[in-house]
Amino acid sequence: MASRGERNNNPGNLEASSWTKSLPGYVGSDGRFAIFDTMANGIAAQEKLLGSYINRGYNTITSIINRYGNDPGAADDISVKNYMNYVAGRLGVGINDVLDKSQVGKLTSAMREFETGNTKGGILDSAKEAIGSAVDVITNPVGAVTDWFATGIVGRIAYVVIGIILIGLAIAAFVFLTDTGQKVAVTAAKAAV
Image (cartoon, rainbow, N blue to C red; front, side, top):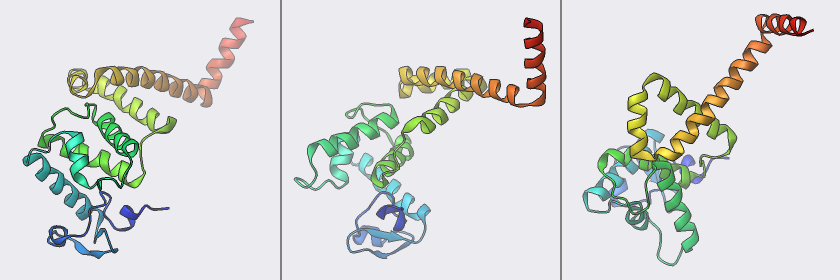
């Protein structure tokens, strides 16, 4: 089932206001939140808003999320902390580290995931991240390591190790599920006897 933000093409859950009404693709409100004609316009609106926050000095995850729309007293502290920690984890930074405008895309993506409930997690997402990290190392080792220092090297190394293991398992499964793999396995079994 699609979340409210997804149904409204507003995955950042921007409230309807005179500002959102002035943006490209605004088509109305569901009573509280803006509705955009396309998901791309809803995403662009969120990126514009968060970029303006950074320009005005709201440049940490803590200050951005507190400014973003948490009604004082309406959300419990644990929910807000979970939100901040989730976003920080996705960016590989601390909740009070200073962000710059180059990070707005990743920031909005992480916030959209949390806002819509489409958070990363589980073995499938970990496997995709791991394989992506391993491929990064193979195709661009210097760039991958440089990126890791900016986003958290320990987690990335763990993803590479997991990725290498998963790639090895995939190759082994492929070899043994193909005719060639079966012939090799039979020949190896005969030689062992």
